[in-house]
Amino acid sequence: MAKIVVALGGNALGKSPEEQLNLVKHTAKSLIGLVAAGNKVVISHGNGPQVGAINLGMNYAAENGQGAAFPFPECGAMSQGYIGYHLQQSLHNELHRQGIKKDVASVVTQIEVDQNDAAFDHPSKPVGSFYSKEDADKIAAEKGYTFVEDAGRGYRQVVPSPLPKSIIEIKSINDLIENDNLVIAGGGGGVPVIETDEGLKGVPAVIDKDRSSALLAANISAEQLIILTAVDDVYVNYGKPDEKALRELSTKDAQRYIDEGQFAPGSMLPKIEACLSFVASGNGRTALITSLDHLDDALAGKVGTLIKA
Image (cartoon, rainbow, N blue to C red; front, side, top):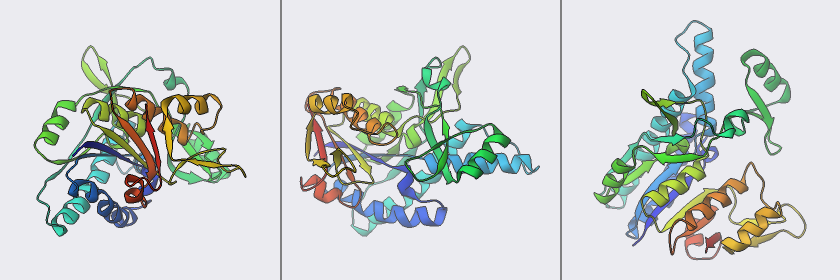
């Protein structure tokens, strides 16, 4: 039995409530296998498309006299509740179907960041939907948003992505784990907050969910961090004739590949860096990067990239 943090990508959760609910039913079936094997599991997830859609929709309604504009931290918290609700429901149903008696709980999670983090001057985290260049330029002119081209798939809004420092609700999360609950926490990387003279205050940013998942895994003394993404394996020379899947990766070799520029900054690089951070946080800790569809095969060593010291 092990304590495991599983990080789900926000892009894998769908573009609408209906699509998301259908997708997380499949997700639940894959994840319950870890629970059925006797592991203590904590689930985190991305929220890039969802938080961007909530933010844009709320502000559009406000501009048309239908309510107040919602700041980005509040939109992040709303996305945690929205995604957490769907995950809770699907996981609960799958646990019941398999005859496993366990409660599921989502924790709206605040994560402290440094208000002087350089990321606030350089927005880089894609959120929301994909747009054509023409539509992105129009929204940018109207709202002052920053857009960048995202991996050949179109243009997306980018917001600051500061590094996570500490998890405000970590004691509550640990209490839930120790009482044998299946926990969903750190959704969307957590709501970013800073410490002020008056207490905690939300800031407009999105923390990379893989970095916050690594921090969460270290803070709960997990043995493994599993990052589920769109590919089965981590590759070197990705997309080239000599591309090579990496089945096992030492931290030393991973750093060498980072120095060579093998991993794309907007996709695989933060995942590798998050894994290295977690593996370095304690003896015997490992990280696994693979796809949701082939999680069972990855746990059996057939696919996936296992990162260890």
